[in-house]
Image (cartoon, rainbow, N blue to C red):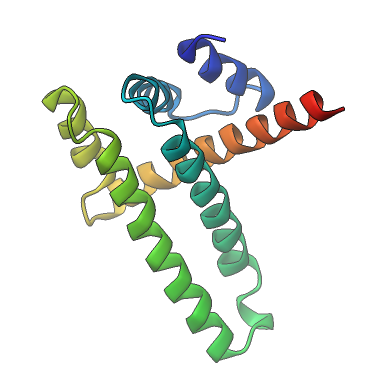
Amino acid sequence: MKEVNLASEVEKYSCFTLKRKEDLEMIINECSRIQNTSLLDEIAFTAKYLQGLMRILKSQQSNIDFGKMESIRQDFSDNILKVTESLRNVFAESDPRISAHFEQNYFQKNQSSFQNLTELLSDLEWLKKYLNEQKRLRTN
């Protein structure tokens, strides 16, 4: 399957809910170009994990004691740093316009960049779910 088609397949799998498909395609294509699919897998895994932490932080705040909540927040912060650093590594030697696009849209310390990153993480979570589903289908 071609890399560009992977993003389209993920989009279909997500029932067309991707918000950052073009940027997801860029990540997939660049990981393929640098021949580092394990980095793509790591980014997708971390994104799925972060999405789970966000759901906990949004919905369970009143049911979790303060110590646990602080631990979850710290884990969330650590993994945000991990995924942004991994994404920077993907584009370290790519076209400077692409790395500038990601720096400007996802890595700034402001609300807009965080919202954009959250949407990209959601798309990456769909990528992970799709890859897991494909793996299950191959083993059955």
